[in-house]
Each structure stands twice: as C-alpha cells, then as structure tokens.
Image (cartoon, rainbow, N blue to C red; front, side, top):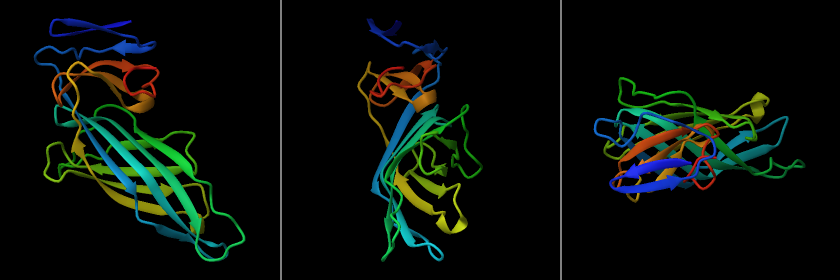
Amino acid sequence: MLAIRISSVLLVTACSSATATNDSPDAGTPTYQRYTGRLASTATFPFGGPPYCNFSVTLKDVELDVMFRDESFVVATTLKNRMVEANVGSCPYPPGMPSNQVFEHRGGPWGANDDGNHRPILAGLDANKPETAVTAEVGGPNAPGQRANLRWARLGAEPTLTWIVTASVTLQLATCTAGAAICVGGTEGSLYTCVDGAVMHQVMQCEAGCAASGQACN
C-alpha cells in the first residue's frame, strides 16, 4: 500500500509492484508536466509494386503522451496507433490485417538538442505487427505552437514492401485535478500526483509498469 500526503489529507493508493522515489511533493523537488496530442489519421502512403501488388498504409487513432521534468527533460513518452493497409487497384493478395501498435521511451531523462528539440528513443512493444521503428522530434514545453514530428518505418520486409509514414502532431498541456493519481510511461511508467491544475510530482516508479486505467501501477 502507498501513502501519499497532499496538504493535510492522507490518501492511500494500492500499487502491487512499485519502487518509491525521492520526488516527494516538497519544496525544491522536481516538477513534471504532461503534454498530449491526438491525430485521427495520418495521410495515406503508397508502397509495394512489381513483382508484388500495390498497397497503401494509413495510421489511425494516433495518441502521443509526453512527460517533461522541470520543463527540460523528457522522462516518459508513449505513442499508440492503429496500422491499416489496403490494396490499390486489383490484387489477388489481401493487405496486412489492421494492427494496434505501441511505442515507449526507454531509459533515463532525455534532454534537448542544440535546436531546443527533444528526440527520445522509442522502442516498439514485442506484440507490434508489423515490426516498425519510430523516431520522434518533440518541441520543448511551453513553446508556441508546440508540435511533435513523427516517422514510422516498417522493418523486416523486402524493400518493395517496406513503408514510411510521417506526421506532425500538435501537443497541448494536459490539465489534472489536484490530488489525482496519474500513471504515465507504459511498461516502464511512473506514478505521479497532481499538485495543481497542471504541475505534478513523481511518487514512484512502477516496477511492472502502469495499469490499463492510467491511474495506478500494475
């Protein structure tokens, strides 16, 4: 059981597998802000060709979630999307089945490059189909018109059957309710508590990642 003290109220939150951190809500501790972006669909990109059929790929339901520490470091990123392939013209072979994909930032805090942009390394989950590599360029927090530029590239296929998808996602500062528990980061996520409408403090790193609810550790 985890006890979280917020002002004069003691909250008790169940978390079956987690490691406490030093980031308690005291003066001088790191602060965190969460930015999210949604895109209903990317553009449609062609691939394939002789000796195979012509196909297209579109990524739908794109969701990007980025956590910044002290407005300087990316400490958690998750990217979700649904991959949809289609035949272009007549073809005796069906396209690949639609597939949900998840990518996560692995490792420690990721600072900005000289241009002020962050390029966290994202790794795909083993269940992703097809195998896909993602690169991300994320603007710093509080930047005007803050955006993330994303690039997906299919791996493990013959050159003719590989594809590349690019998209730009607008990011917005996510608000929260004071005292609420929020888990961000996927399988290597951490539990945070909301201090005011946007600022958070880290409570602990979840040893088994975030629960599906996004409000507790697994």
